[in-house]
Image (cartoon, rainbow over the protein chains, first blue to last red):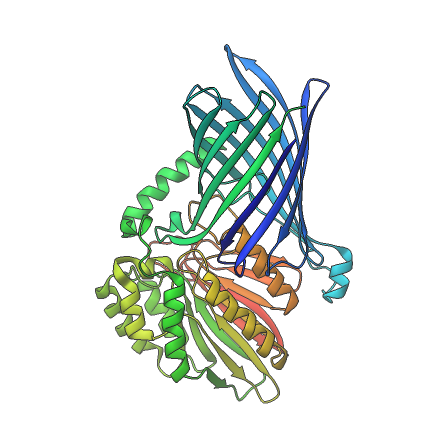
Length: 216
Length: 280
């Protein structure tokens, strides 16, 4: 089980926002399955329940190295009648000091039938829009001081619930401390900028996250 | 697909050099979008929104993107077309120049060829390079504004946004919300112009608005029945119909573009439509 709370602000949030996430994982038929939910609180967002993410993954050994391959699905109600879906394939690979995640996602925005009627959309108009496949990546550097604590510095374009476009990376620093062999607390700060690949960057937002992992 | 991304990365790097990119923009944002918006609002406070009168119910507006002056061959063709009195206005949807002050000077000369047709200038990321914001501010005064076209029976609203930094920023977003809330119901059609395109229609290394901001805009466009969003940046045309809104991404107008074109935004019998006009 992984529970975290997050505080942050960005150009859209109209002040501070808060997130609360709960993720439950289990091994089923040699596969790791997880389900996660996100509740958000901000002036900009009317709904509190903002995401459901499902993940199924498996470890594969190839040339004496362990890889993890997974499929992800995320459903995010955005506002009345419109939701975002993400379908993703993700692989993970870990060396002693470095970690790599690579994958692809496809994003879809869709209006519900009810919303289409309420927005008085003409017949024959698209209720759904698909974007082209988008590269997902995370490059991490790990530094451990002892068996109990360590830091991860990461450049990535996704987290548990948000998959940004491949051209919008964020910078993350995570500190984890194992209180017992089954329990871990962690803190994370993240920084987002806009326009990097347009060669005209602009600050977009930042967050602070504190979480707790319990291996049952 | 990964191989494709690597090729695109190399081509993009080459293009960044070929298009005179100002690489200091990777790390510095001294002309951030919230600051630009404040300066634009100062200008807007003394320059009311332009109301263009059309004597006929049907009319058209010409719109072009990514002309990347230096080169002026295609831009001259566009200027000649814009001069035609049947056009109520011409809109240049960003990346009009390379950002260098000498290219702003070339643009000023070119704009004299528009005749009596009013023109409106959006800012793109390239226009900001080499401290281009100062030239843009001196020459055009504002990068966030709206104008209206009034026909004998109705009026249409056109909103121009500053997305040159890959985000609208919280100030401009609040401005957009307020204007849609207070103005939209008084106008028949509403069109929004932005340099940066909203949806990723192909894998490129040009950056779009972050997903967090895109979803906020989709909400506004749905809630206030925005009819059309016209964008550039991607250099390749794309049309996405989604809900009540048509999202139109334009080809580049630049001389180096193989697919150079501009578009006519037409209002016929009260309805908005579009037509691409190829240049080659």
